[in-house]
Image (tube, rainbow over all chains, first blue to last red; front, side, top):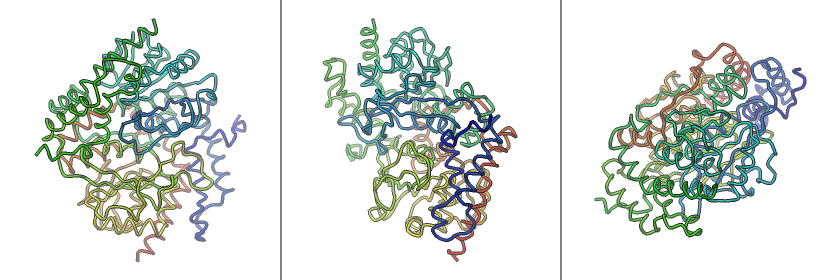
Length: 290
Length: 290
């Protein structure tokens, strides 16, 4: 049973941990405390065997959409959780493998993301299809026929159809949330109604195989919730410890009903036109879906 | 007063929000609901003026070290918080501006980071010097004279000297934590003693101008704590709402004393050799510091 596990099946992060024990730098400097590559590999395989009851499971194939002007933390939170798993394969998906940076005329981002896999090379059956949020990219993608067709096709077959933040508006524009309860960023939650979905204030919403998270930082709660379903709650707890996810926000202002009035007004004012544009975009998307 | 603010001083994220109202995609498709570029800019400037009492302040110059085999979430958590500020300038710092990916023989990362600024081009005086964690990169950087010299020099002048996760071991190896209380990743906390620092279990530790966070996801708590000091608690709360940071972990397992025994044993076993190597590396670093 344990022997079925191949080295290539091992999670990136924990593989890095184990492989990291063979330190090129220290070796080059003649340091004698570092284990050899062979002993690190042996240690690694021993760990995999010893803890297979915790970390084992069939290979997971995870596809994560990336796009220009998405919000990096929306992607990196869930990615960090997924990457920590053993025996998985993660695809960062876009039309092509050119880095997705900013849309024309937009500032930043400081860290452009290079897709790993073009739509045409995406595995036919994903265990997880994931869509991050971020404006204004979300609104553009909500009207991009190529992306919507890809999501609709993959979403029909995927084990779980998922999102964080305004990513749920993209899922909705692809027709994937009609009749489902879903979460979104607090300021755009009501746009879900235009897409035939029922908005929820929950941080992570599970409705059949749709799993959607709230805004930005909800991606970490979302990721742990999902891997408890994909693997086991015990493994999700190990990942939570791995990421030292014991949040202690210095303030209690992370939701509109908890934040001071000035914070809520500032962001509501900033978002006003964007939210209007999101409603209009959603209505056009629904009209096209028929 | 308000007129002092220039467009280039505006925070990336909120600039994206405002600029996003001019949607290239929708415009190209002849949609008529989108505001024009001019009206979006006007809205944006009006917002800046209206909320200057909340978001105003002198320009912040923030330098964030990046390096091969760092842990992406360690960087992206604080970066997401810093990017949301108005009137700041963020540098991703390394020896050169080639993307920092993985160390030789290491897997991943899926998202390599391209530094924006080489050490030689770093502003002389940073308001914040930040170092992310991540193994095995941390151990290599702890013995890299060029990086340590850069950090020691910038750290002596910086307004705040900061880190998340194992980044504090790098600060320590640069001699910047002698006599300070500091946080680190739970598994490497005791290595701080080898570097002349006093380890703390707090999620974010402030000791004079040293502000250090615990493992990985502590970077968000760290970021908000720091901007409450750099700007105001009111602004930090607005950023918390912007990021919808209202964490609701599905389990209570994010610290060793809270996690189930199997999770703790799994990770402790995985880390055993790495922690030994970290102690040895720290002792060599201290010997060199004299």
